[in-house]
Image (tube, rainbow, N blue to C red):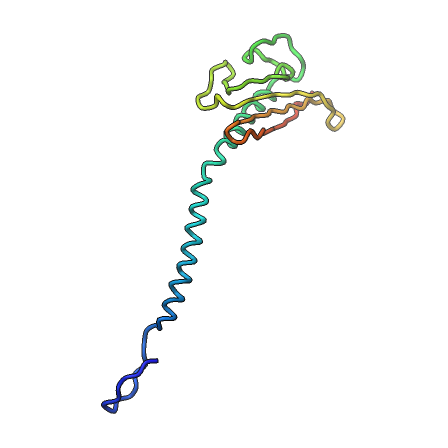
Length: 155
């Protein structure tokens, strides 16, 4: 309540400003809001790098799957090292720890990834097909396997 001493006959002026209770409530509400925003920022900063191994594993799987699906459906003569693989079946059972390029060069930073390939003949919509499954596992990301599958049709 705002009062002034009445020494002279003047009209009462309105009091301006905030009471102590209003200031305390304002500080409390703003403090709770700021604490919420800071906790969300803290959580996102702590977990910002989590998807990196997952994205790398999926990228490795996608690249190898694309390489395999670009090969011939029919079995062709010639196997051996990966750079000599010429048909989809050559990749069946392919397993390696440490990602390499097609010529066998180790890729930097991908030495802990384990890559496995399975090729299974199947029928898809009445047509013969080969289902190619590429599994990439990264031990530091909890050892979760990431799988991508694709079909190579006989057309």
